[in-house]
Length: 183
Ligand SMILES: [Zn+2]
Ligand SMILES: [Zn+2]
Image 1 (cartoon, protein in one colour):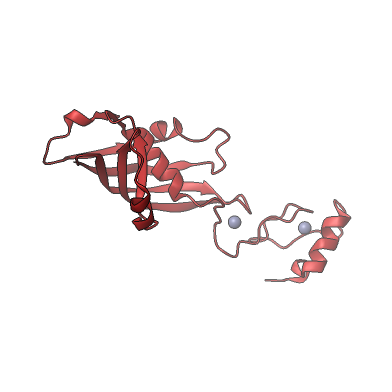
Image 2 (cartoon, protein in one colour):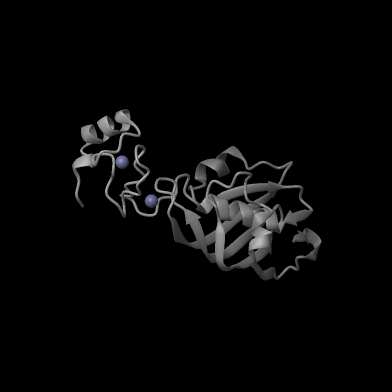
């Protein structure tokens, strides 16, 4: 979706739409490190407020994702509930130094050509910004044993029980105490 600046009335304009998985797919980085799936369409509400030198975009992006844990590769649900508050500034006019200093972290400046807002691009950026660099099914996810491949959240490591795939991995596990754990 694209919105021309001159299509935004003085009183502002609200966009409400859903993103299905096909739409998301178009923006997922190649090799998708998250193995993203949508559990339901993403709800997007964006209020476009035209100001003299910029467009302020507020709203919410809300949905439920299914992703793979970076440590154990287990699939789990990740809620998406992103407030949006972006100042879209025409490209040739970068924010002044003092504005930058005043801007707290949550104040986001983005640049555009001053004529057309690439709404889909913007939504995709917000979704991927919302994802942590390393998604974990839980903070203390114990991951996969590099020796036997056991998911240590669910199974006991089999290396000790005679598995000889990797003596090095076994050594490492004993060292860190993980191999002794019976939890
Ligand atoms: Zn995990
Ligand atoms: Zn193991």
